[in-house]
Image 1 (cartoon, helix red, strand yellow):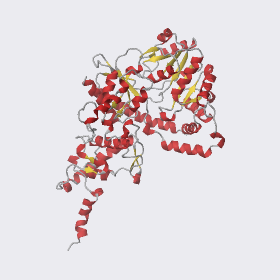
Image 2: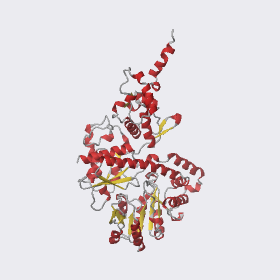
Image 3: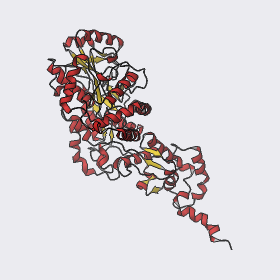
Length: 564
């Protein structure tokens, strides 16, 4: 008589151990991300499952996933989205280990390639990492205001039930509509001083606000390594009050960074470390006001945030129009302003580069006594064009140069730098001294170590590749869902501007932004950044979102446009 173990053991093991179950036959596998080897494995196992009563749609205890919830032909995209949501709302915290691809494929009864493709998408986004025998692990969580309760809260702001999508939460409550009013509040009145705080606090499933890099790419390991190295060699005296200019190590690192990347030759003694470009503008405004300069001209359209900071310190901000070559210097002369704030390498929000002819005109204007404040906010992020030299490299006596790590690493660091012209150097150092006695010393030393070790440049190369893919995804989505829109500023930066012709959209861009927010997508209206009347448009950030999220977000905006 044959041994029961020998005759039945393998069959029983296959039934009892999920990791040994066969995967779904080839005809049931997703066409997305299915490798030939996975398809072959699936086909070979089809006969083993064809007679099983459980060979229908699969499910998993892991995140309560049900493959029947996935749209036909989009299983990898669906799974990636579900994993992203679980990471965002905390069900998969940093450090969590995901099921092996073979195990999850068996549970869901899909090709292993479907799972591999979904994991790959999140790995490229920087949220997952393979750890060999340690499996696939969550290494970063996206920064989102909707992360409080992704199972219900992000959908409560809908004021009207849109067409069902694969991202709709089964537990969405129709009775939540009264909560909609506070969430669209940022667009019900002209933007005030707290407008960006209000917009950040408004829940959204997909945030396409401009100005934020991919925060999941922050080099945590390199930062910790640099911090340990700094602390290990730090003298006790260096824990005292520091130089309001900034630590010598960071000033030297910044001078070297600007020489390598922006063509600026500056002595470390010329560098003033500040708490980001926002503080830089505040210090400049105070100094100019004390020097009897009551206004600083700004580009139009131009950054609303920058304008708000300058006005807070009692400087008027007369608008000067921008065209395809940048700021119109003839209009700047006509304004009578003695100072101007510019973003010449990548004008915000249009993305145009200050042309050569305009640069020469600007030099002549500055030679007559004008001061240029150069905000070099994202010049390192370029994709399809050669680098543009900073104005500071050409006019060191007339340019006050400002930059920061907010777009290179993270805004949370609150570290930036100023290169003042000689006339205002002492006054700006004094203003910084009496503002806060100087930036915190330890983060400065860590950042200096990160710059000099080459980690910052390596991180920038990674970001450029990732941002380029996301930029391309946004352009493709705009072509598909906003065919009448014109795209501006695609060659560099972290955002795009889109405008609508007279036949594309006749309404207010604030109404468009409010309607998009009511459907879970956060954008900024172009009119926020304009002082003069302008055609309707939107400013869309892509760096902090995945290609799938970008595509979905733009599709929602397209639905809003088509609905009138």
